Image 1 (tube, rainbow, N blue to C red):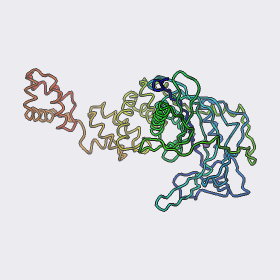
Image 2 (image 1 turned 45 degrees about the vertical axis):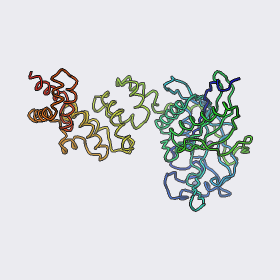
Image 3 (image 1 turned 180 degrees about the vertical axis):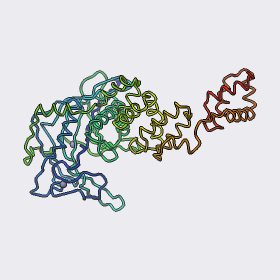
Image 4 (image 1 turned 60 degrees about the horizontal axis):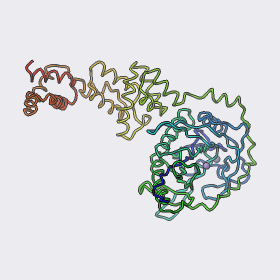
Length: 482
Ligand code: ZN
Ligand code: MN
């Protein structure tokens, strides 16, 4: 059989650890805060001192429940915590309190849309567990340090079924998951703060077959882009191995984003035995259907419903509605601007185009920029009143994003207002005509498209403060003598 003729299909699953947005840790009263001095947020409980007892943070359970409901999972009416035993320097108790055979939630899923269509990524399970500490390796000194501020921080581990068939689908799944978790106030999902971490399982199988191939796991991916790159790299590597007639070895890998390749961390020799057993210091949890219903009723609008409402209520296009509903702060910004300006479509346009560009170029988010819905409303008003051209409006908005100053003020102070004085426009038009004899001759010779170039020159000379339409009209009048 010619192995190279086989067409392979990607089969991937994702495990996501999401930090639940609580003020204190899962089993003690220590504060949860990013960037605090090492080991300043610790106590005997999270340091694993003998004789201490864990005490469940109800808020962590509530947020876990909310996530499970938002993801359409089935919630266990009786669940429990278990000890996952292993030895590692970032784990002072030598066990992690997690959930083993009776997770908080099973089933559910997320609808994802990519270029190849819509598919459902099913959720296998979601369980509560505590985070471990963090090891900091000092390369120069060949030393390592332990910071236990993160030990005991509440997490929800969300595991999908192996339903993902492309790197794009993995990206779409994570984007939707993040949007849902943020919209429902479950987690900020700030990956730079480690609030969302992903492990990806990858295997290949000949297209059209059902049995799963041998999988490898890429650990600790801290950006959606790296998830995509790691899946693509693993697909290529598996394919090359299989085509060379070699077998895939079940293993755990790390992704090197600079080399764009995976690196072996350890080979799995049989399943690791964590010797799970029920946590004796925490009673099992009973979750009533009333409780679940209350969580369901209190759930805020989720991105999919919001997207549909933006299309219906504001007449926004599907593409715009999708982008606007993909993040709660963008959605809130849009709705506020749409309501107070009464110009929903323009507001949507400006947000998905200009504002996205401004933020992108400055490496800002809507939250970290100084833009407010009020500044966008001002801009839309200035354009409508003919006070600024689109070019000047963009410039004023960009400056407002950096300084937080009112766009109207920026326009007034920096003389960006549209030149409506006809003598001034005429002067620029005359200058442009005099300076571009070739283009003028071309236009007069019948090349009508040359007018666009001349209009561009007028715009350039006036720094975009003249309305293109006014410039074109005047140019035509002067050049045709009409
Ligand atoms: Zn503590
Ligand atoms: Mn875990």
